[in-house]
View 1 (cartoon, rainbow, N blue to C red):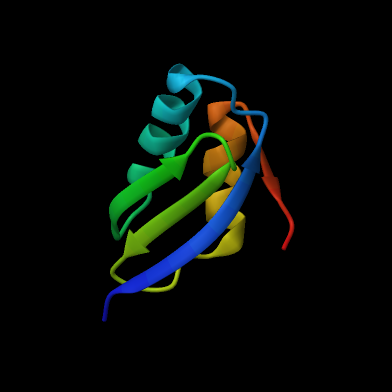
View 2 (tube, rainbow, N blue to C red):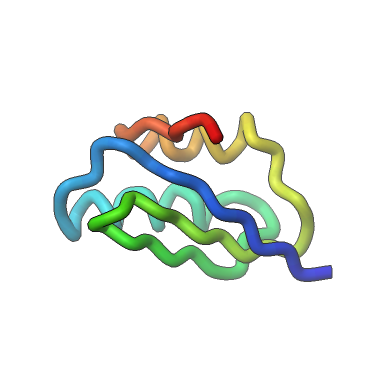
Amino acid sequence: MAVTSKYTVKGMTCSHCVQSVTEELSALPGVTAVEVDLPSGGVTVASDSVLAEDAVRAAVDEAGYELVDA
C-alpha cells in the first residue's frame, strides 16, 4: 500500500538544503520518492507504508533542519 505524507521543514534556503533533506529522507526504509518545495518548505514523501514521525524528524534533524509540528 503506497502512502503519501506531507511535512513542513524549517530552515531550508537553497538547492543544497533541498538535496540534503531529500537524501536523508530517501534513506529511510520504504521511502520511494521525496519532493521538496523550497519556497514553502513543504516536503511530500511517498513510501510503502506509514513512516514513524520520529524517524522523519530524525532524518530532517540529521540534514540540519527542523520538522515543523502540524
